[in-house]
Length: 178
Image (cartoon, rainbow, N blue to C red; front, top):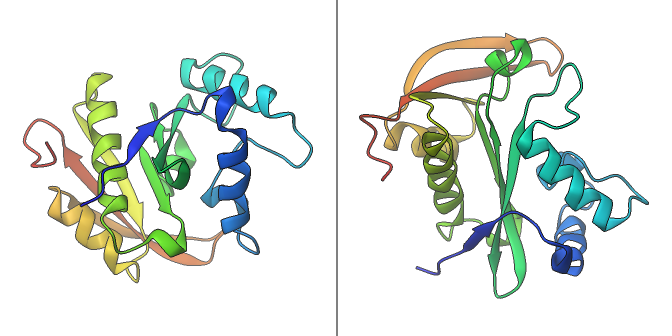
């Protein structure tokens, strides 16, 4: 299996980031980024990501979070967002960890690498358990969550998205993700 380099963005990653963004053309940009907006200088984006991870300047609503990107041969193949806290919205839709793999890089084990890195990262922050959510139809995520010790608490209807989501908890002390 090809191993990803998984890390935060640096100023040297602008071309890889923008190329990765094009991979999601026609999709919601949140599959690649939550903070970058059209016309934003890349350096400002990197600083904002660093501040988000430290909880600096986080406005009411969002929570401190770290965005990690998976690189293969200089290309971004996916990302993992680690939310260090849960607010009311994240308790229903989002949870502590979210990840996405660019469509052309799927089914190669990269999602698993990003997912497990997210679990390890949040465990190092001192969390004992994490919440993950996914649509029941997302069989790849259901399998990954359950395969890493996820226990489904319930299914909830998210009115703003018009969909049902499953809510899973993973006990990091007893999980097999290591």
